[in-house]
Length: 498
Image 1 (tube, rainbow, N blue to C red):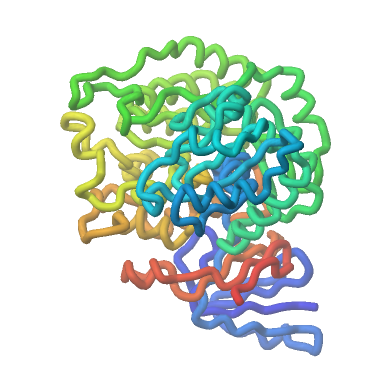
Image 2: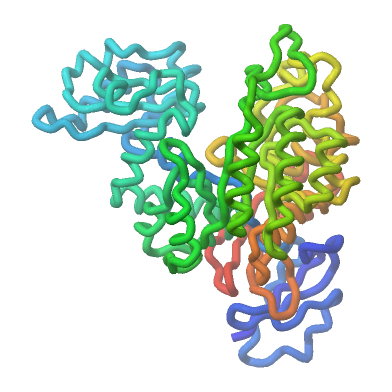
């Protein structure tokens, strides 16, 4: 059975949208033309789908995802509808079996709705001997009893995934929980047009073997948290046949902290007078050298401009050992400078940005960028420098920091709008809409060695994300209101908006 998609707005992953059609049969594209002259293909085995006002593009690749982080934010008792800690306490009490000591997980409560933060003492009133954890919806606080603190080794405000590693590792060992939450996670991403992800996993990827039925392609990177990454494990993952759609990608290395809380490594001085952290870049260089010698790429995560520059120099020098088509990368890229992008361009280092990042600041007035560092405003999210240097740009979400949302990505990274107010962040330094679309399609798949996806061409996969309007129009509000209508993966419809 052949299908023909016709539209006034087809983005093929490379060029500006055009009026045309795409014919496909089975998994592959048979024909794509910039007109509607498909009459020669019509027969009783062909269906024409008139998506005339819809926007058709390749399925998306999200280049920075933590399923483990999503799992830890959606495991157990849903407290999203509770209005107070007492109401939440009752919901937790309802599921407790005093004869058992198994872990109790909860999530979704709002400090703003509750009007404050709950105390450990309240949980102790339940007199339950097992650990209880309840993560806030904004991940700012984790409500815990004494047993949880002792078992997992972090306190209420240490809510990064790295801090909660023991808790997350425990959740990942619960096969029933992983299967349930993964299906929700996968369907959520398919509903956003996402068909492929780069997954960051801590220490090992054994939990990926538990997920039986899956549609999302997963290219995973290992990050050391509790123990160093074992070379033998990497060699095993390079050779080991995982379940379908899972491949080993490389190694992720954290370089510095967060600029907003003054732990990013910067060239200048913070407005408070504080200098950036002391980082032993030789240790990082030695790690990169070790992996690049084995043809294993590295993704270095940086925020400060000093950290970004040093990371680019390291990857440029050692990346020459990588085989053709395999690339080192730098993620986050909060502060960007000319010297940094020069090194990245020379070393063919992939840039991995978070295009929804301005969504962390509700308005320009509440943004930290103008104030945190003296005279450094131009360095923040200056994607123009990447473009001018010819650096390949990919996009990720750091999910669950953000959930992939292409229209929002356009609003934040191209129109450079905050969620509230009319002020923008240096729109001249943003991406064009076409560049942003390419970062989620052609560039993202190419950076991860997925040659059959990311562009709409004859012989390539019939994988599409379809939106309800033209995403390249210049009216910001129209783009912001657009929605995913359908997602096709290898010729099969895997999502349709009801």
